[in-house]
Image: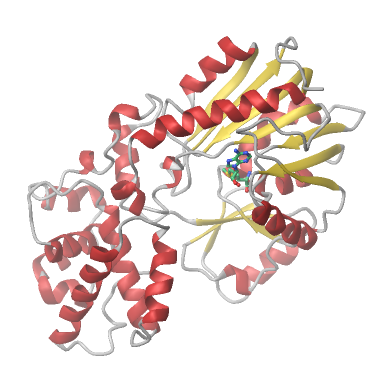
Length: 409
Ligand SMILES: C[S@@+](CC[C@H](N)C(=O)[O-])C[C@H]1O[C@@H](n2cnc3c(N)ncnc32)[C@H](O)[C@@H]1O
């Protein structure tokens, strides 16, 4: 959403002031208790006075504000910070900014690097992300910080057999899109692709890097003559499992998750996707569990995590995430892997995935898995989304060399 100001019902100065007041008041009542988009949805349904243009503008003002993270150097009023955020995060001339700060609006279309020089007394981009001491050394700190000032793209993955149909559909209504590889299309985040494409049947909405998380499994599965058994043990609504079905024909898949409700979503998505042959089972891997009594060739552990590699999509997390949660996630991830491992065959593979940039959840867990669980690390990689308006993910592939944890009877 661009705040050009053309969308304002009038250019009356009262209007501009009111938008700022609404946004300040919304942010003062938001304490990070739920994702900001859900909070806004509730606010707008309780405040019917805001029409659709108001809603878009207030939403954009608030998200831009969150994008500043901890970068504001000098104490200034919240109004000033909202205007600074419009200047840094928007790309084209804004009547709104022009009203309050015409001198900044005159430079709004400059490259980000030049805009940062203009406001270098008020804003330090190296302070946007507040957890630098927890960040993996693999992540380029400056680029990662700058990525928060730019809204990530929306990505879809075209499903097998639907390429022509999807490309024709998105060409016709004049969507602006970029084809990144055979199956991956990027849109600006405002494009309403779900009105045009049959989501989950023809294409899935899936981040660019999420689309390549299973590439490490290709050499293991592709040349196998017999069917490979896979357990997607934190399956959520099934993004990785649908990807596995689309990539590999010779697999049997079991999906589980702690939340029964998300498995219901998975079932709906699988139905849309035409996937019938799978075993669903709720299983909380933090505890010992009895719902799964089989051993698998491959376990995909796309574990719950801080999500810090996706915070450019949810920049409110920069303000509300608590550092001590990183350790809690790292411990939960260990527990999940520990409880899943007895169900991995000897010489079977564990694919460990997070969307975190924190070393505790990634490299440090990888070290622990090797030492404590006798897994051999084959490969690891950060899939760096901050360079391309996508999510950043971490993937590590292990092989189980000996049965160190016995399967419960
Ligand atoms: C990163 S999400 C999975 C995303 C999913 N694989 C996808 O690609 O769409 C992590 C999932 O782990 C699940 N989870 C959290 N705690 C768990 C636990 N103790 N046992 C099993 N699953 C858990 C969450 O419900 C969530 O759906």
